[in-house]
Image (cartoon, rainbow, N blue to C red; front, top):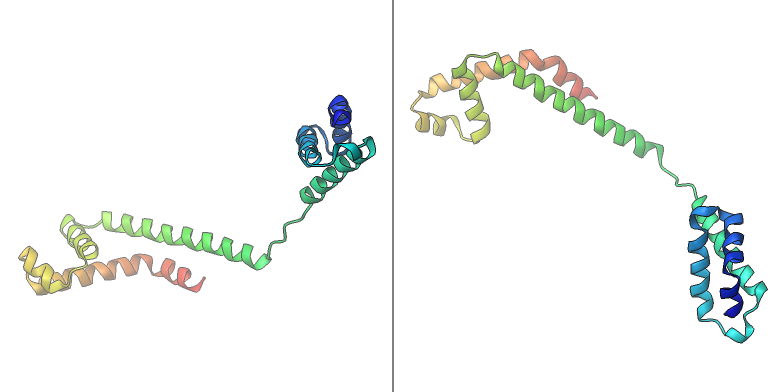
Length: 158
């Protein structure tokens, strides 16, 4: 082990010549850990050299691995992102359309969509007649459909 410690700078320079400055010290330290459990009587300069060289080759081999990616997965991911963007665009257009409405229609439609209540229950809670609610909600749905039908069709087709 004395051979290793006395020539530490030489081992670092060896590692630098093979892998560069960034990881040379790490590789020499890893070699020290490997050699620490080795029989010190049999430890010589060539064995240390081969150990460091082997660790450098392992590092370079691992660094040069190419990660294979399936093109179908990439296209599917891009499609999902595009579809999510289109969905968000439709939601924004829906909100803009609702903001153009009279306050009564907008508020009633918001309550209807957010509360998840039937028209009967909504009529009972608000005191508005069932017929009035039915025609107002139907009118609101038709307005949204008319404003967004092309976007919804494109979204469903893609």
